[in-house]
Length: 321
Image (cartoon, rainbow, N blue to C red; front, side):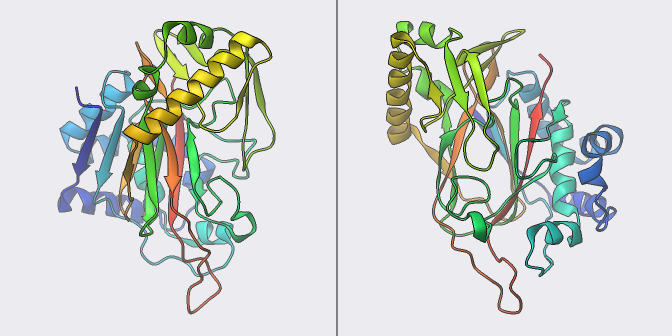
């Protein structure tokens, strides 16, 4: 089976999503009741709108045996964006077409869209766009590159899947991804066995209150055959003993080698959704690490002081294992 699949919606399917999104107007109900709306309203509607091959691929991902990454393009998006300078105000004032597509498609995974209580965005739908005050961070609100990482691996209930919806793209700024299998194949058996031991501390990075996951494996058995690979390109994994330190060194070497030889990337454009397994897979080490390449300057519109930058929205979905 192919590791990734790429789909393009028909104009009829796009129009159906647009009508669904427009029905929410500027309501903030998708922010206040994300999971309730996903389960009770959006899931059955979206399953009918999407073609059978996309629905099947999403269901296979949910079972841990399908593609590890997919894109769905030609989705509708919010074209007339508010001009207020403050991001939170723009989010409230915009139509909710992108949120409808993002939450609706992810509802088919059947998990729980996570709140990030330690983040600067505590809800389930997160804005990934540069904010002037934090432009130097290696985070969703920063303006530069982001090293390869799996999302939120410093908490025990890390997201199984991550999805990015592009409202506004930017030429030269790309989302990079690296298959976990391309890293693990470069590790010897001794290192793999060491990474399975609960002798590591994993810490949060930019954009979060300081959090650590202690006494954790890096290759973590979640139950029912699901495995989380708590991998970071940055120095975010620590161990006090020689065995753990040696395994971390070998892991970084494998990540660097895979990065240099196996990195893939996509320049997201408006109306494209990227969905992938967050370094969690059933039956084997799998999924992807992701990062960002390219620098985004803080640009303003000519008519106002509002940001005119790349704008993605993100949800993280956790399954029960």
